[in-house]
Length: 497
Image 1: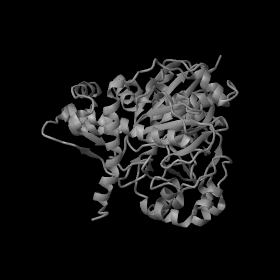
Image 2: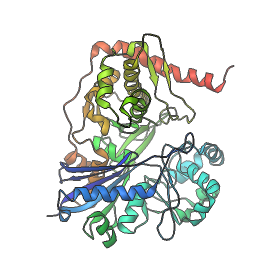
Image 3: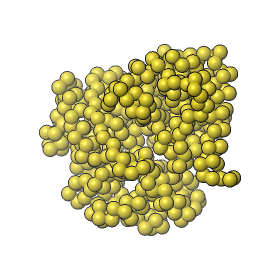
Image 4: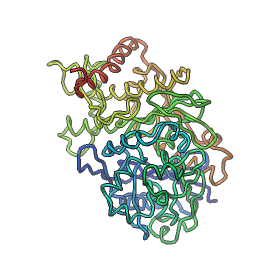
């Protein structure tokens, strides 16, 4: 019987696909790498055709191991906000500008001057239009600087929506991937908002709920991927939301750390609360959470490898880095790392923030730098979680960690020690894929609600306990961590000089 589900995750570093049964047991996994282009400082782009090529590769690999007739549907998860321009023939126009691109700073400033907080709430359901990574700011930049592509574009899609288009010939998105463009509660684009910014609302795709069926696999897509024609395609949503689903962030009081290319820290809440630096999010009517995405998490380890472990060439020697980091004591002998290597999103939202090693002496060597990087990202997680817990008036005793970083027992232990909370990794590390499969299970009617699907399909490993003897030391270092950013900002910006 065809009751297996495929979760397809269009990420930043790769495309992943996984086959799950109805209970969330992962059967097979495949992945294919993606390339990121950085033509200028602060820019980040990808070739949209690689999303489709990689999708075809991973699906064909899955179907060498499992009968495609056993698959009832495929759900999508994807990096966001990233923008793919598509013409009337459904061909791509230039590279996609991806989520971590910071080029639209002037447009973001102008946009926030044109739209009041009250208008933003009325039109978009939020008072925060965001920074240079905000979708409308990005579209303003494209309109001004890629006018030829913009004029030819008939629709602007997210990467996973572009894959949905190739799979089903349907140009749609989900209402959460359209954030700061459509109201997430209604999925409606406000004409007044688009008129204010001078953007044509006609280029926006139809919005669906994340568990809604977007279409069916076409004959052409079936030949390219190995899927069976007519297989249901579920719209899915933002990868961060799918990851959070896989950690159960929609349950009040549950904290989740998505350890991927960036860290995304969330806390389940019962009602909307205001908090500086993080924002409330929800998936359908099932659950709400405070969410704070960083700009770099696991990506800091890739930078560390390129900068400090060049003898390994293009390989990322995670086992070597962890081994050397263990050679440095907790606290890295006073060396502290600020992980703002490409500006920062939550909780400081400063595109001009810079990273730093602080406390450097002749005593420090590569081992200390490496451990400081692992610890610096853990401090970033704590920073977001502290703000969320304070706003929600909740104190959690454990954090669910998911994503690729959840596989590192060493990093999980550091996070437990820094947070002084139990860290529980998910059994499935491909949580973007699992979240997409959870949504597919609802869309196909296997589960009545997203919460029911989470209860059925999420599995957790035993908890990793913190070392209480390190609490005092890490509390002191964390206090310094919080102080260093505003101090460095004053120096780097020339404030107070």
